[in-house]
Length: 394
Image (cartoon, rainbow, N blue to C red; front, side, top):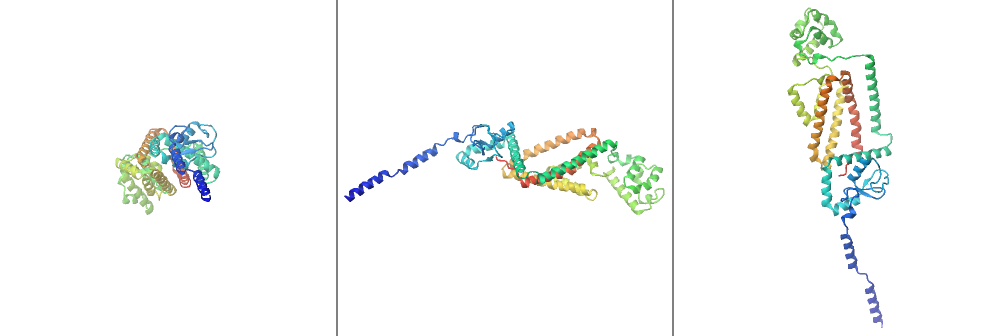
């Protein structure tokens, strides 16, 4: 009797035991039933690439969301029009799932996105918007960006005030033609003008040069003995050595040497053009630093501003190359370099055409504004790169 009960109970327990094989089969069949429709973007109706989840719960490709945001200028869902809060982030779990289930399609779409410059610009603008939004919320009215923006605004106001004072005072600057005119063609008045530019002490010797009608050809014949004897009678040895040193520079260059950085706007020789183009294409910031280093003893602060600016530009360029390398977009570097070169050449050509028609004082203001303000702007950019590096999800 006991055996019968046990057999019945055993039979009952065996009958009630769930069928694990059927359960596993149903689960595998459920997994196999996953279709692409469940991972489609509702904007492009293709497999999600870098899926971004909004606060309403809808998912879109990040580049689709960036294109929508750029065209509509609205922070709302493209499907239900509910506004999102904060800045949308990539859904990492959903991204990993799509990358694993549809790897071929995702890789193909990412390659197409990277090859499309319009989408790249939209993604970069969208990410910059998010970076600025985050900084404005967490660090409002603080940080290096706000400080340097205030300095830049203040210096801009000072520059505007100087320009207004210049035009109201009626001061007219004339360009020094001796830096382009051969010394052998100088007149007596031009020789005296060159002498006066040596310093206030040179006023003591202008009358002998005027009385003797010393032109450019006679100036090239003067030496130490001629300057020591009458009628010039430059008995001060320091004055005489200064005149001879400047005269040697004039003989070497064939024209009056530039007295400041601005006078380097003259046309260089073909050899100088060749050296410039080689260094511009390969080592542009070294070219700028070398130029400033040569003038370090003449223009103390100006040269140092240029050297610091060259260092900052080197850092920015290094950050840009690092981003291209880490995102496997280094192959786009030649195209970016060509676009930059074409942009610089077109701007330089336009500037050369407008140069003769723009007053020199206006050119000086723009030149020195760019010279002294560029380091301030680049410091702000370097701080942004180091503290808030721009990330582009591709």
